Each structure stands twice: as structure tokens, then as C-alpha cells.
Length: 492
Ligand code: AHR
Ligand code: AHR
Image 1: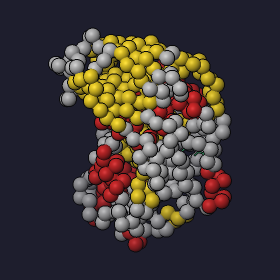
Image 2 (image 1 turned 180 degrees about the vertical axis):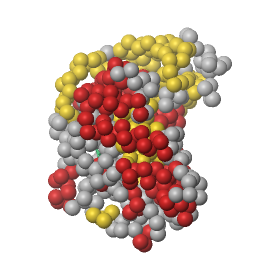
Image 3 (image 1 turned 90 degrees about the vertical axis):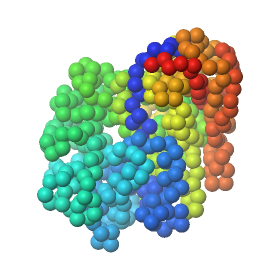
């Protein structure tokens, strides 16, 4: 298998730092027993797991979405503020188990400050009201001598939290959602929520629920496009078949492009895409899990193949940097988590390592490139046993992203070889750039089905080395490589 890549020393776009975002939901052990565990010897005085904090800081989480997901649609924020002993214990009737409310708005904001992330709050359109959303916004962002801003101050937080990102509802297009409604109904509610929330705080950015369905998305864009800043799309994939799993990144690319064209056709180009839930989600059936255990945990195993899907997603998001403004992996810890915890230990899945490599070793300026490679066609079943099947004619065996880190004056070339057996013979033309003779290579590969677990936490980990820069080389099968090449002078 072959690939030819020519990199141009020309800026092709800016990549939003928010594409490396995460999501935590009151689901299984994501928050309680994951990011927040008051009973763990590994937690700090606030109940934050120190090992999780350290891992999340390393991948510089830029934005964190909370409290759901489906959970958000039945969440009342006032249950989660005030003295902890006085907060109500409630049934989590979305995912099962008991919601202690010990992790609420103040804890979430404290967590975001600690990891350096922008908070992104999703308000309820299920059992919640506009009034409640406005009060939440007042509590978080206002400095007025009014009830909810005063409540925050009295609870020991004199400065407003300045939460910029507010999502209006979650997946209300689906019958599984509390607050399920039609596109028309949603678009009108959205218009009202966005208008009045921006009236309270004009600096906020609003994320609308998109449905990955042109009828829904056009209705939302036409009716409320002027008052929103983002429209969302959610995608989960994963199949027993290796190629079906990795090819899904290119199905995602088609769906993102379709949404971008709807934005363009309605002349709402100020609206960016928030790809605010994405991941591999295998066959675990939430309803069955709830029946058997009373609680949904969704603790999916992730292997190298899932990490290659994630690497494909980042190549796609780099390519679509003009239209995608944000993305959030669903989710951060335990439930569909890229980090797994036990009381005394933590495991970083291969997906975590893809975040580490892209966040820490690619730049934010996209450089132009040309690529010639080989393709395959696929008809695939995906997500929960075939609920979305797709057919694609041009799935690349090889993908590449070329970026420039202006501050470090480094060219970063991320390359993925998805081929199961064959190496990819890469010819790299850097004649347009003042490239140094030596580079640093970060490689992630191994057995396609290899997972990191509590017994073998390091089966799949990145390996770095110094290498001489060569115009042609062999990229091993099923591997991600990121090559960092210092430049001899600045190009931008
Ligand atoms: O991430 C798990 C769930 O998937 C979220 O709660 C929901 O929004 C989506 O359906
Ligand atoms: O059955 C669970 C729901 O189904 C998920 O929350 C949603 O994403 C999926 O389509």
C-alpha cells in the first residue's frame, strides 16, 4: 500500500482548540467513583480523584460538558447547590441508581478551574423550564443584587463563574429523551431560551440540538439560526469488524459535511458545528443492563482499533476546521470512558493516548497538503447492532493531517495507516518547507484488539524516538504516527 504526501508551507485554516473537549455525565461511575470519589484514598479534600485530575491535565481538556446527556433533561440544578448534607438524595431515573447531588454546579466549576477547561452546561428541556434555565444562568454569571446571584455569593463564590457555553436541551429528537418533541416545537423553545438567556448575558454562546437529520437541522437553523452559535451532532459507532469500526470515522466526515452544507445553504455561517458526543459504543444494551443491575454503567472496553478510529476522527476534524468549532468525547471516565478507575488504580485506554498525541504534538494551524493513497469500499453496520448502517465508496487506508505549531516553530504530520496487514510506503515531499534533518516520532500501535486493563495497563502506549528525516519510509499496519519536524525558520 502506498501514499504520497506533499505539504505546502501555506496556511489552510485554524483548528479550534475546543475540538479536544470532553463530557461528564451522571451516568454509572463517570462522576461518582470516577472524577469524584469521596471514599477513595486517591482523592483530594474536595473529593476529586487526584490521579484522574493528573491524567486530564496532561491532555489539557479545553472544554467540559456537563451534567448530561440524557441526564441533563431531568436535572434540577438547585438540588445540587448549598450545604451538601442538605442536598436531596434522588432517584436517577434516567440511568438508575441514586443521585446524591454531592457533585453539583459549584463542584463542576471548581473542577473546570482546576483542569483549566471552559465549562459547558446543558440546560434541561425535559422536566426543566425557561425560568429554571434563567435562574441557573443568573446563579453562574451575574453580579446583580438579585436572588440567584446572591445565592452564589452567600455560598462562598463572590465572583461570577462566567460560563460561556450553554446547551439548550439534549437529543430531544429521540423518543428515549425526557422532553422528546418535534423539530418545530424544539426550534421555538430554542429561540426563546437563547433569546432570553442572551438578554441576561450577551456574552454567552448557545449550542442547539442538531439531530443528524436534514429536516430537523434545517428547521432549527431557519427558525433559530440567528440566535445560536453552534448546532450539535452526536455519533457513536463500533462493530465487531475492524474495518467497519475504523471506516466509521469517514462516515462521520460525510455527516459533518452534510451539516456544514445545511448551515451554508441557510446562510448561517456564523453557526459552527459542536460535535459534542462522539465515541465507540459497542453492543452493551443500556436497557438490559438497567434491568439486570438497576444501574447503567456502560463500561466499554477500548482497544487499539478504537484508538485508530479516534485518530481518524481527529484527521477529519482538522480537515473540517472551518466548520467544526467544538467536539467532546463521550465520555471522560468509566461510562464509555477513555479513563477507567478502580478504588486504588487508574487505566488509560488507547483512546486517551490518541488525545495525548494530538493535543500535545500537533499544531493549531492547518497547512495545505495533497495526498494520493488507496481506498476501499464498505457496507457497514454500526452502533447498537445496526441502528445506523452506512455504505461508503472511498474509505482511505491512509489518512494524514499536516499542522504547524507557530510558537514552537514545528511542523507536525499525523499519519494513520488503517490497513490491517500491510505497511504503507509513504513518500513525503517537504520541498516547500525549511525542514530540519532530524525529527521526533511518536508511534501508537500494537495488536488491533489489545486493551489496557488493570493487570496490563501499558499494552498500548505511545513510544517516542528521535529519527533522521527521510523522504520515504514504511508506516506499519494499524498504526498512528505523529512526526514533529522543527523548521529552520518561521513560515507564518
Ligand atoms: O453518552 C451516553 C448517552 O448517549 C448520552 O446521555 C446521550 O446524550 C446519548 O444518547
Ligand atoms: O437506548 C439508549 C439511547 O439510544 C441512547 O441514549 C441514544 O443515544 C441511543 O440512540
